[in-house]
Length: 183
Image: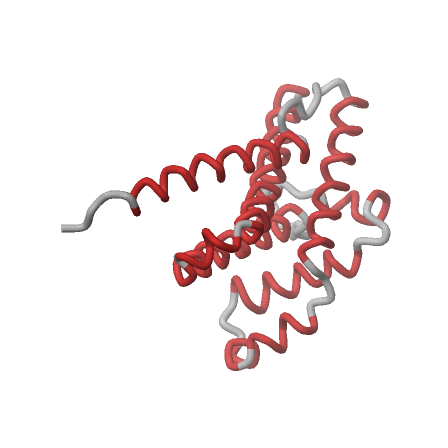
């Protein structure tokens, strides 16, 4: 495969990783502002659920095991799991189970009792954060080793900082609506 194509594919993978991390940070930082969240509790519960699904599905896709179908290319970090992600296997397996049983398929046993699935997944949001940060480190090393550039602004600290700024601006915008008299 030509180096340009590899770089483009790698950039797509990094972008997906950054999107998943961003959704995780939005989800976590929303909870830090209890007063703002409590004023519009039902809305924030829905928003939080959407971001939770987004980051979990995003990470599950990144660690998806590619099927060997002729002519089908799948972008995955899966082949590095054994080498680079030891200690994260339980989280990765839990993500696969979550993706398969809850997000992709209507597994009736799970749909009738979703708490059972969440209780048995074996990971927390902190485990996902650690896994994502490890993935950033691995991809940065690979990019550097093969001369594919650097992650640039796609790193956890920059993403978290941007999300904090975005949420601050969003809060100002949302509060401005409460000051408008309702007719």
